[in-house]
Image (tube, rainbow, N blue to C red):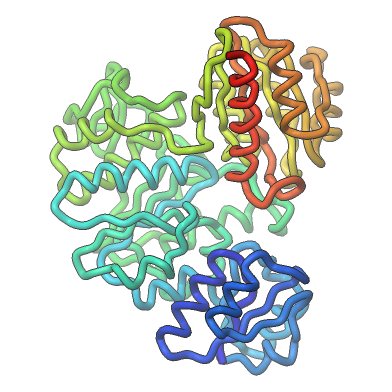
Length: 443
């Protein structure tokens, strides 16, 4: 019997895959009423809810743990001590996934880069599929994969914790900043989880790293794959920027002004994507055309509407402090910022510092509201004016009353969403609905 711990989207996908491959599967979830419980029932997969039975886990030949399940819970610790293998959904799906694998990880920018890589590679001759932490479990990609498929996967540190044989043909590490410190023993443990993406690569594989990020380069572990670097500075070898032009190995690809994504951080994401495309011999002209035609994905600096001269921007995917800082820095100023949610353990002082000169009003929401407000109050400069909102609808209403033509209302929470929402997508959708509701009232 194979046990699947966690009955959310990836747990359901891997349970279905294992069942279809002929394995006996049993599922478990700590939630008394998991959202996808009925789906497991329809598949005929037995399950328990409201906890994890240690005796069942000890009898399993393997345990597949969903990303949201902390690895240090008691039943998993007991199973690990008893020698039961514990792996991630990514590891299981990789066993049957055909074709090449491009794995993209990092603290920030994963989803945008994954989507952009898939978009650029689609201009080539091979079929391209995108999935992983981007919302489509890798297990759901197995059935339609072929030896010619290029599978572009967003992978998280949680997924990488449970890999054993996972070996991407091209692995990308965008950056590492403090995140998920509520789950890891410390920053070093989180950092090393990211580097597991390179662990099984061989010399004929490609490892792409950020030359500008001190936590990523030089790498703290040996990398056997062929290294390629990207940087916002000129690079004779690798991807860089020279006189406002993006280059690969010194050859011009496209002017930075043609990149349709906001923010300097997105230039680095594009450089990483171009290196992946170069690894698959996509012509420079095709890279340029595909990049220029790319549009921001949902919940990532996504303009929802402009109402009476005020732009409303959804960056719900800014789930940590560094991501929120990058969102703020993508604008020149005149910002009304909505921030807050479930605290992930990182200090908020850098976020407050980034607000200076750019944010003229802060609106806090969620469980971390008080902690963010304390950081603002402790700022040497006195911080920015703060208002607290009960929910997203009230936050948008307050922002609308305070905004002036030319302002931007930015949702960049700097926190996880799980105090108020099932995920960041639901949070972003709530922001969008509140904004569009305001637009309807104004028309």
